[in-house]
Image (cartoon, rainbow, N blue to C red; front, side, top):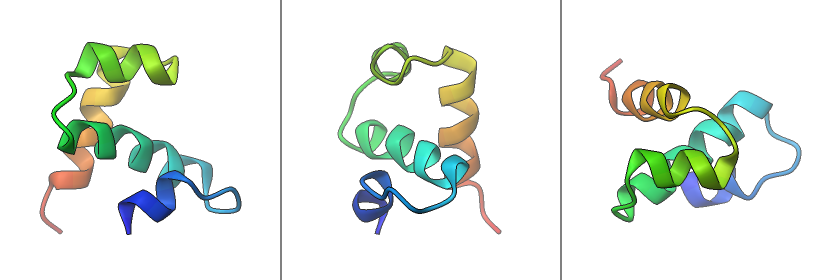
Length: 56
């Protein structure tokens, strides 16, 4: 599901961005590497990964 969202073109921008953050983190990449690949800040990646793993 996350892989499909990360490659989607018509999904909500925030959902796609979060999926693009989560997938590499599951693969073991560190936050600074993910942030550099996506062109966003480290704090943004940390928030995206935390929000996706939070219950509820």
